[in-house]
Length: 251
Length: 351
Image (cartoon, one colour):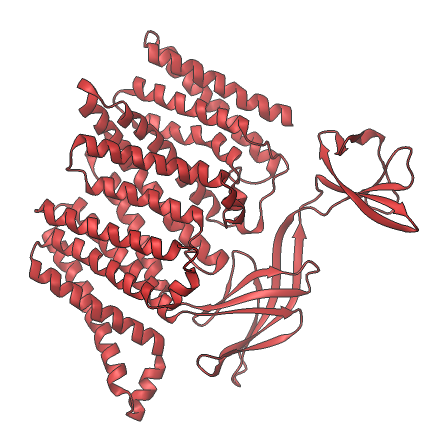
C-alpha cells in the first residue's frame, strides 16, 4: 500500500513538471495542456487511493491536503478564459511543488479520523481553505512577475485570482467558527492557527480596500498576504507551538 | 456609495487598526486571555471595532460626517443596551415591577429598540442609495461584521458557562453561584460509549519477570514486520496466542516475551444523557451527545468535552450564549456577501 501511494504521488509530479516545461517553452502548448490534464486525472487516482487507505475523506493532515491541492486548481484553470497557456504553466508548477512537499511528509497510512474531525463541516472547511490557498499562490506568482510592460496585465490577473480566492478564505474562516462552536463550545479560541488565518484574511481585506492605491503597494500587499498564507499553512504547523494547538491533528 | 475614497480608506485603516489591537489584546499569552475577556478591555475594544465598522459603512455610503458621528453614538448606546438586556434578561423586568430598577430595564429596552431601528434605517438607506448591486453587497458585508462584533461583545459580557465532571449514573443539578440559583434543568449521564477503530500499529512488549508480566518497550508495525529498537520480527513468524482475539503475539524462541497490540484510536465518544426539568415540571428527555453534536435545553447547550480512560467519568460543558444568533447571522452574512461580491461582477471572470 505504501509503495502504491508513493508511486501514485510521483506520477503526477512527473506529469506536472513536463507540462510546466512544455507550457513555458510554448512551442507545443497543446501537448502541455494534455499532459497537465493527465496530471490532474492522476491526482484523482491519488485522492481515491488516500481515501481508501484511511477510510475517510483524505484531508486530515498535511500530506493529504498537499495531495488534494492540485485538484482544486483544475476548476481555476477552466475558469481562466484568457491566457490559459501562462496560467497552465503556473498551475502545473504549483501542483508539482505541492506534491513534492507531500512526498516529504510522513505517509501516515495509519491515520484515522479523530472524533472532532467527524463533522459535516470537515470537507467544506478544509476544501475551501485549500482552494483559496492554491489560488492565492497563483495570484502571488502573477504579482511577483508583474514588472515592465506586463505589469498592468499581470497585476490585473493577480487581482482577479485574489478576488476569486477571498470568498473561499472567508468561508473557511466562518465555517471554522461555526464548527468550533459545535465541537468546542466557543467559536473563537485564539488558537495560533486561528489567529494566523485571521491575519491572512485581514491582509487581503486591506488589499481590496487599497485597490485604488499604487501598483507597487498592491503588489506588496499581495506578496505580504502570500507570506501570511505560508505562515498559516506551513510554518504554524511545523513550529513547536503547534503541539499545543487545537489544530494539532492537521500536522 | 463610496463617492469619496479618502474617508473610506481612513475609516478602513482605523477599523483594521482596531482589529489588530483586539488581536493583540486577546492573543497576548502573558496577559492571560481569560483576564482580558473577564475585564472591561474586551468590551471597550468590541465597542470600538463596532463603531469603526459602522463608521466605514456609513462614511462610504453617505459621506455625511454628522450622520457618521450620530451612528457611532447610537451604536455605543445600542451595544450598552444589548449588554444590559442580555445580562439582566427577565430579571430587569422583575426589577421594573418592583420599582427599584425600572430605569435600568427601560434604558435597556429603549436601546434595543434604537439599535433595531438604526440597523433597519441604515440597511434601507444603503439599499436606496445602492443602484449598483455590487456595492450593496459591500455595505451589507460591513454591517454583517458589525453584527459579529455586537454578538461577540454580548457573549463576552453575558455568556454563562459551566464545566461538569460527573460519574455515569450520577444526576446533577447545576448551581449558578453568580446568580445564586440553580439552572432550570438537571443532567444525568446514563451511559458512556467509546467506539474505537480496529487494530493499531503500536504494540507493547511484555516480559515475564518474577511471576508477573511487565511492559518493557514499545514496538511499531512497519509494513509486514514489527520493529522494537534493534529487534525486528516478520508477521509470518509471530504466532497469535489462543483466546487473545489476535491481540497477543508470541515471539519466536522466547516464551517469556509477548507482544500486545494496543487498542486502536478512538473513533467516536457517545454519552447517553437524560435531561430533566429541575424546578418541579415533569418534562424530561434522553439525548445522545457526541463531540460535534451538542444537545440543547431552551437556550442552553450541553457539550461533551471528554471522558476518563475507563469511560466511567464524563466531562460536560453547559453554555448559554445570548450573542450566538447575532454572531451566526453576521458570519453567514459576511461570507454570502463576499461570494456575491466576487462572483457577481462580470469583470472578475477575465484574466
